[in-house]
Image (cartoon, rainbow, N blue to C red; front, side, top):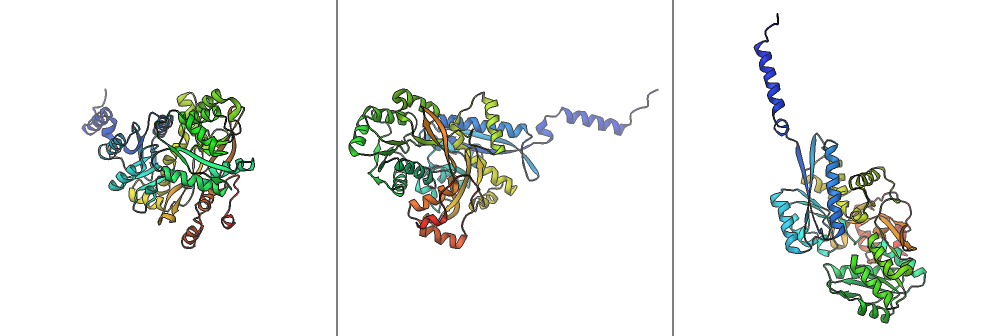
Length: 437
């Protein structure tokens, strides 16, 4: 004969069954960490940024979420298309801020730096952005940090220009479309050319809707330029300019900055091995990256998407810098993270290598808010791009200061705040002693 179940036990069993039937969210609603991004989906970089964001969120959530202090968060990264224009950029930013209620925005590739910094500052949204407009480094801008930028990136261009100089080039010229921050871009590239020993010609700035580059190629040849930097002339524009220079019979060296493998293939189809010897940004971390965590991310990308595309690797540094801040402070509080980022103590490893933020005393901005990105330089051999050499964070920082004639300004800053400490990287050729040579 079975013993009757006690009333207390029966009630407990009923409660267990009831709880089991309740939705998971009702039992213990997991906290959500929302991050936003605005980029241009009409570019390969924009598409790849979204793919990386989706992969990062999926991977972290599959591992149980993001552990921050005593809390664990489900990660959401909302990446929106700005359609390549300012009204759509504003709409996407306002949607993230007012509708999605994000506290962090990052990896904003081609998303109008000035507008982004302004809106994020108004609502105290942390933004790890991309850009080079002087306004982005204004000391009044308090909630914007550059995870991608060109101010502390002169060592890349200086290294390329120096290599070309050693091969006999002496006259430099920047050729770039008219865009936000174009004067800063042309001035900074010109400064690096001068540091390498070049005579620098006035820049050629052309309308963004230019299609026929034959007249520009003819002008370049007539001016006698022997090294040209294509500045912001990436993608199909770079292909067209290179082809036009080839057709015009120009002989010299090209620094195209950014050309991906598909674009290189298109160039080679038009000009053959004429482009061999060109040095350029090397976006593919495979073969240059040694960090175990970054190698895992690269493997995960291939497993998820069945192939590898390097176009987004440069442009998701903001995520790794924000992750470093959250993990080291064990906090998601905006005020806590801002304090940490404003005096960032070290470099952070990202997919393409170390990145480190520094203050801008030349702008009276003493927050560590502008990036020096370490990365690989590639070289074209037999129509193919190969890794050639590395540009270190230290070189990027110090060469830029020397190129801009800002040595005295930064020396005064170091006297008060101390000299920065750099990551240990292979290669490099510039030290503090070289600033006075």
